[in-house]
Length: 328
Image (tube, rainbow, N blue to C red; front, top):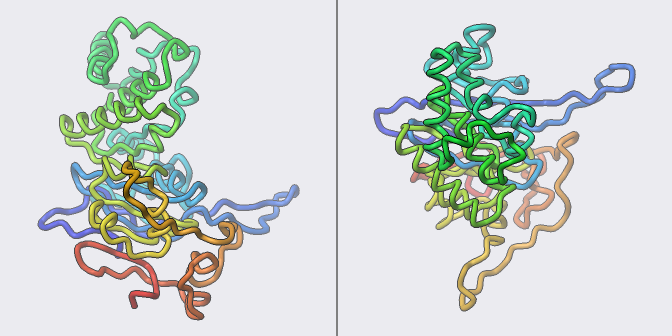
């Protein structure tokens, strides 16, 4: 199992073997195959924990987050939150649970209505969930603007009047409007300048401390993920390759793919040299992923069994779990 053990604490969210396959259809509507975007992902998220999900573009990180949110329907699996499977909820019961799990999107501009003032954008979740009177919602929106580092008088402005970093702060304020327990952050800083990235990351950490939030933090920048995450899951072609506490993963990466990823992280010291691991070949298509271990076509240590047997996740101690035949 991929979940990490925490003494005397039940996971706030337990994702079990979720799959998301997108059908490929002919012009006549016949299904001729599937894109296996997410394939048997399993992890646990505890209260006040930040779980980072990393991997190359197209590995299924964002689809995992959107599937948990039910923005796209799962093909299989479970997402247990407070004893309820999010994938089985419908109607009002699903809407009530959505209040407790919110999302911050990658592109802060396209996630906002250009014709709606940002004060109303922040109030919208409160309106949907019928929380507070009109005056109370307005006061809540202005308070949130202040908490994310904006001014209350900016309530009446439109999204195009803000910078990218400010728009992302608005997105964070909107996600916090209904007091969620979990926030799924889908590459929230990838579209921002480096100096602004650090401000937004620090803001997320401050809000987590003040509101006891849990984050699923999706990103491709390993230095950012290392700074904010308590544990990290490494994905490749829809599967989880390795998962461990952050410093344990950086100190001792076990999976060949994780080792290659970390070797690409620059060291801010010109006197130190690090050997770069260059992976050969292209990423296989998720339409027809390789049999056995999906990484075997690029792995420098691949054996015959890697081409036929799917490696099962193994806990090697220190909550360090890896799916690789090298550690059987």
